[in-house]
Image (cartoon, rainbow, N blue to C red; front, side):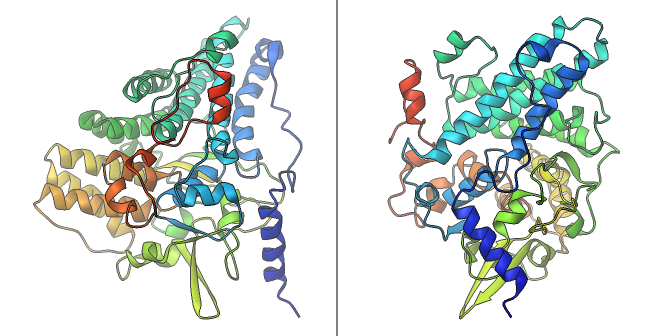
Length: 453
């Protein structure tokens, strides 16, 4: 008899490759309200806000729901591609066409959420009878969403418009801002969010950002800008918060009730937990993507992340590897939420910032906190360069297949050419930026294309 789990794996894999967008999706969340209804009262305003989070996870593979992780993993050196998908192959071969459908979604979806966040920022102030605390919460979350989406847009495309209004004419003609200016505006939004949000979560679970979520993203932005003091200070505030602790059991890190979670997204597709679990796990030869064997080979002997977060399947004489952070393939019992921000990253941010500020003892303490949790001995060195290399290695392994960390790390540290040119036929330095989608060039007379496309 054919193994039922294998049969289900193959069936659902086939459906995935057919891009069956409606498969096991629930109806559009009733929280997706638009227009004047948003500003009627606190309930409709909150519905509009939480509707953004629902949209982030309702699509069967969108910008905020698996595609950022997968596409940047293909573009960098995390994944091998086993599909016949032209759009995925273009990412894998660093041969992106401005008409690529996945590329368009990486542009359109964040800007859609930004537009909705702007509508909330502009409209909440018009609601009568709403408390200042409620206004502050809604506006703070909207600023966080706007910053979060722009962070990924500038990471993908470099110079991008920073959209902070719902004015259609203004937005349709928006100019690209230099990346440095985009990061500065992200910081402004996150500072606004930290000042408005509270330490407690305005939801069951950690699915609506609090002040520490904004602080955690702020630490990352400061790191990317090379503001080492800012990165350390923001990371300090998150690490020092009593709300968060590193999970001692690596298998508990990505659960819905993880103590390490700073911000998670609540899955809304019926019958699944996370789309990542459904898309990355396989039980025979891969039909979508698999981890590059070289990635697995970089783990040290005894690293618990290798046994807890990486799975393998042998098919014939070949062994294939997959991310096993999300362990639920297909289940209506919801035990895993989609992790967006977590505590371990903050230790690695602080370690890197401290190294650049010559606080080597502090840096080693942080990086060894992560190593020890993975079952590894302390790393020791008096060399800034060697400590940075150790931190980069820990980031590669700790943050494997999570939200594009590997791709962004290669870019921001200037190692993309060195690492990827031997792996990617025809790699060019200009490939560190994705092309601006062709439709955007046609729609906005002020939009320009990135070099190399």
